[in-house]
Image (cartoon, rainbow, N blue to C red; front, side, top):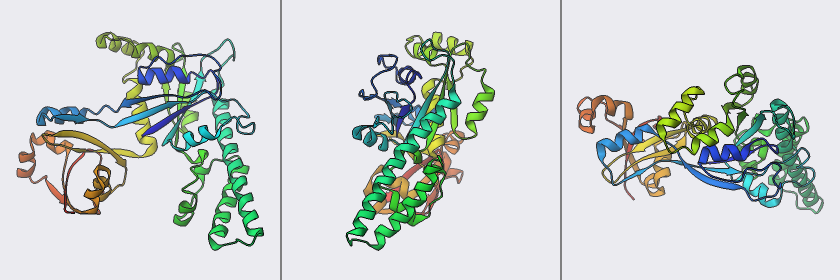
Length: 356
């Protein structure tokens, strides 16, 4: 999974990046808009993997990871002024989701926080960038048609792009549009910014943290949202003493680390779940889309498993813990053989039977 941190200058993105990744990236006001992003990979903690490892004593334990990319802040009008370079747009499009960081602390340079206005500005910039891309592509299609290269495929693409153009001109993101199967296929290669799944990180001051239920409620009408006390949590991430860190978290009424809260929100935003594989060689958690089938799960492990899929041996993590062993799971009739169309559930433990 790859998550990009976006926000206006001085929103505290790099502070959040450091809190999430335990990095020491330089925190500066008004960094250059085209500065190289900060990048780090974090591990997705999963206590189920830890518990299963206690039973199987594997040679290797593998957790999913999230790549966090902290992009330089951009200002209002960036899209029109060419503030997004070709390299930046390419990098944006490779992301699975955007995390929009908005300032909820007073700043000497920018004054009182305006998080709702900031969110509107960010969304508008993405919409304008998409509109520029759509209009450019439509112009190319019209030019091709004038030169006698009109085809059914181009006509179909033009219809979808005009539908998108209307949406964007109404200052509405593409993700709110409904597309049928053929339309999705036509636009799949474009990866529009306002089509990306997005979540919001409300970056509050230490004194304001936990006192923004009304604001969080307003934001949650449109986005999934989590609140961080950015500067506090950046300092917290640097503590080597776990007990001391827990005491500070308790004082702030923070139940989980910034990393764990972002992970949960990201999985919910993207509709991801985890299934598990176990054995003496490795215990591992795998990330797949909710609603994925057993064949999809097999393919996430290796394409040969999907190609030669026969059956999936399956039992749940919950059943394993309740029974205490694989043998007990089988003895109590909780072990199953599932076919290709089986919908994988979060916490399923799978072993794929296959033949290539």
